[in-house]
Image 1 (cartoon, helix red, strand yellow):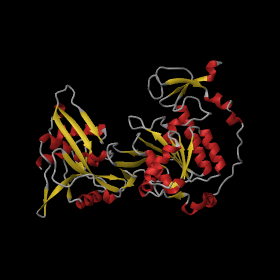
Image 2 (tube, one colour):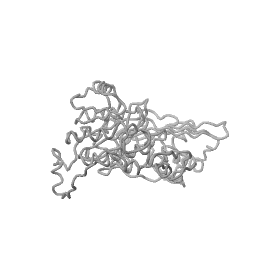
Image 3 (cartoon, helix red, strand yellow):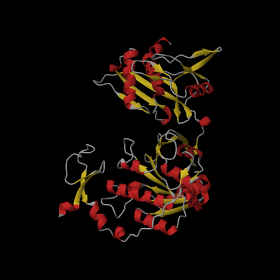
Image 4 (cartoon, helix red, strand yellow):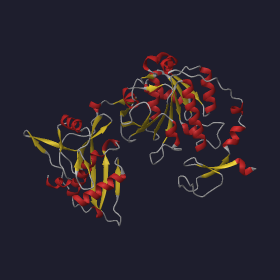
Length: 445
């Protein structure tokens, strides 16, 4: 009888098994199966579920559906955050009844940005990790209106649901900080376990749909940059936002990897200052220094959504005395960097098999498109030859180069999308986009 009441749940992927195994057959991880009480038994004996009453369901016609959205019915259930960069990433703004997973590394500024969001439009802040006094100090430091904040200090999803049932749809938005410290009586396991996170997220999504309010669910990330908890969370919510940047730097990037109501290729740019996060417009973004070329440096233009962004890629190529040369990349996909090293060795004749290669993108930006391939090769070539990349003469003046292009396995350089926008951005900074058909032409410059 005991065996029938117990199951084994993988802490990594959340799959359930009837018996213990050393390795999870679903995700392949070792020693991740933990013995817990059967969820089916817990639900059957749960007082909350057994006494729950269900309202009579009604069919709603789309033509009259907006009447249920109150003051924002003229916008189709969408309202602005009051922060233009936030609206850019979400699409047109916040959709009522949506669940947004907001993830980022500890200390990056997640709570600060969401506090500023509530400060603009008002809402409920569910504090699972901080006290009301701590949040009050942050609100005072940011210079926000304290009247816009209602603080609910709890770690129980059941208490959140009971409180919102009593408020009768007062709030447009609610922030739950964070999902890793929330728990429900209907789920087994300790706080932060896969079962608790899945149940808590599911209940919050139900609350958002039922109340017609937007709920921002704060989630921590692992050392690999993934959201802590089962991958299923990202499929459950409507929107997944990542807040990233270098902790020691001022620049912060807000991007989305999933959005049911808007684009997934837009980014919002913020700068961390004493008074909180400040929006950075396209014309204010300048992550490079005007001047002469430097050894091991190459400038490129990437497209972050619809805006061009000029970035500097730095490379350091030094002789290696280790049996296995080092390959360390920051802001560049590791596999893409390895591919560029192979192309440089084949097409440019660089003996990188006996050199350490270090690549970095300034500003803490992570490049996800292939338009920066040519700049990576140009930076490595400059560092290897210990000479800066050449400037171009234009109307009697020197024009510094900008390297844009996708490089194929054969060393061919292909033009990328939004070529004209990239050229215009380079010209506004007094630079010129290098045009070439093969990376071998780098040696002849």
